[in-house]
Image 1: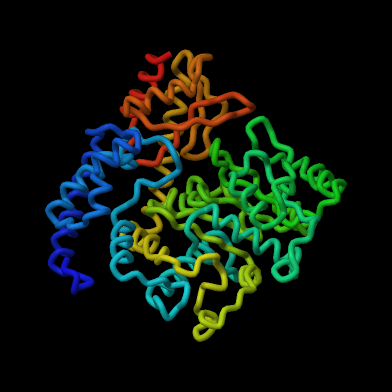
Image 2: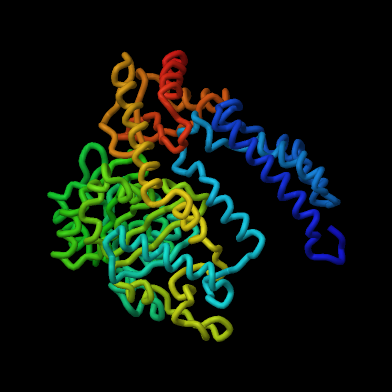
Length: 461
């Protein structure tokens, strides 16, 4: 690239070709399990291998040196397409979503303002219309955000606007509260703090031994909040819980909320994609009773990060969440601008990732992807139960399984697996006891992978 040209088209073409070739080799190698699933060099050592300081100071990268640099970068990356990737709830993205990232990276249309990206905004409208239909909100509204944490915050902003319409201009009343199970995603407590309620405004609901909301005891939680002088503005349920992958029983919870005038929010970041599976959509029975739902595409819909939908049953509720005015932005295509529904002003073309995955694989194809990952997790549960020393505290409902082997230090087992680069899994506490945790995300994960993991865990203990 020369100083006189913002784009050197030939360099772009050559570098893009190198990128496609490098990524294709990386994904193929990852899917085959031919490299460690994870590497964790110290940052200083890795910065040296990547030559970061020199490139930053001097520049001068060419398509040829870029290809060498990219090979090193990819070799040091965590391989989400690897069969032994069983860790965090992040998709092994499908290639259509990667194409969407490539397109947006080149055209850079920040489409929260319609005139800055009419095509991207229109795609988002239609993706949201599809998601609203799946959730059961025919008269609803929505917006796509950069991640589930921001989505939960946005939904609770809408709930706050419904409970305290003057909060945006006059400040937050000191008596507001959010009812949520202790197993709720940390972003719920974080959102309460950001919204000005404070962490202590999150009132814990009664749950069963596995952290699921006990619908029969909802009245007790509501009474506790009211006796403490709190006015609950929302009740949060999980579909499914981050730690266990278990679903709250949404219908009785929704009926309770309707009876008591509570905003019902469903955190479906991970598990709402089960709506696409004939075999599993019953797990979300009652979701249509919610006032708001979030649904992450970068988990089970195989998009790259980040794409999270905020969906509300009544379209006006989302419009009421923000009351911002700025003469240099809020004018013109108000009927099509999304900026009034989201924290972000410069918002990427998030809907394009979901659309292209749907356009290539179809709704049924994505539903089959969800069903297969859920089936693989169930297979792991079946295999683990048959082996002496393994304990699984519950029958899985999704692609997440918690388990223990023996009575030893489960965190130490995980650390050894990570250091080896043989398997990448996480851990969670259930009832105060540390468990190992498998999250099946990669299509390449099969029985051979699961058996090998059980063998290795047994050998380490």
